[in-house]
Amino acid sequence: MGLGIIASIIVGGLAGWIASSIMKADTGILMNVILGIVGAVVLNLVLSLVGIYAANTWVPQLIVGIIGAVALIWIVRKVRA
Image (tube, rainbow, N blue to C red):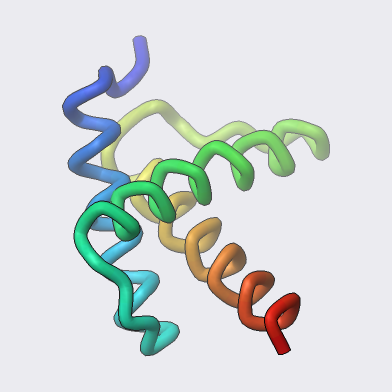
């Protein structure tokens, strides 16, 4: 059982907002949601390749989303520089 679409958007928004605060990025609400969701998807994929699976509940997915969004912001900054 996964989080569902509404919960994923909420968790993604929180993760993106926290990540943008950590990285001092000036992103809007929509970009925060996108960063959080894409970050969580990408990091979950990478973790699954090494045999690590985060539970499909709010807290583990929030943590994975934050880490993934921070990584995405960092990568974008490196590519732009």
